[in-house]
Length: 376
Image (cartoon, helix red, strand yellow):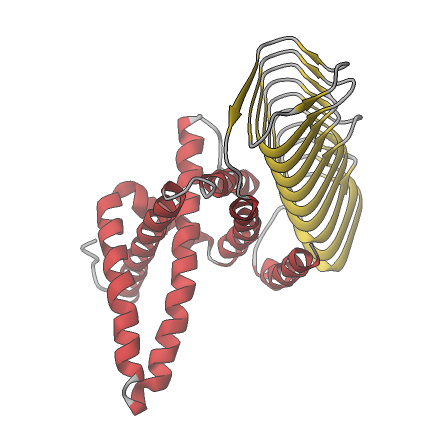
């Protein structure tokens, strides 16, 4: 857990250096950020510790080591941190990823959370559905619609007005729990259902094998990519979205160029490194190559986020909503990682597509900077 928190603090420090170079409706950075009062528009912040107890009349996008998010937020919340504590009221969606997550809030619409530990308190509620993925998950509050959980240890003591679908190693339906729909769960062993729990619908059990290490990797994979996507977009917003657009316009060309770059760039780097005078050039190319692979995956995640938003007729015209869409795409990709073979194949294809699209965009920018007409 400490390792995850340190990673988020390091990433937040990088974000703090980037934010001053960008133009946001309201942005604050620092080792410690304290916000009170009222924010009239969207709010963006990053810091080692963020304590926000303010009314926000738009979206809130927050990254840091330890996050305390409270009061009343009229839009969405997108947050990534070592520990996240949400209280008060959020009128729209909440999309969060962190090491230790505590939710004690009223959420107007959907909740998506991925973390090492997730606590959804008895005073909490959602007006929509909830998707939770983590090592240890406790749901004690009220879910107005359906609940989906994938975790090692799962406990439910709250009220769910829709169906419940669970995949976990240990599952407990505790005393006082109320499930008004069906309960379908997958686990190595049958769930412990307290006799005083109420399940109105049908209960179905599907035995499965469980490998927690694979699942924890999928969760950590999501956590780190969420923050990296924010950093990439804040640093290079135009390049990021232009590259993502190239995947949409010409997916096969992006995939082909990506495959070529994947093979030939490291070959060229190794060849240069074998020549004494070219060793530093080769090492530089190799370092850039690994950064390009990560960038390619993030570009594909932005493409998926925008694609999903279009299919669902969701608005992603603001920076905050774009962060939300890419967060959903990354979390879903992390869940796909839990599927043997398919998860790795999907990620590999996304890396190739994003790598190729990024290469095409760099080529286009190079041609424009030299006054040449691009034929791409």
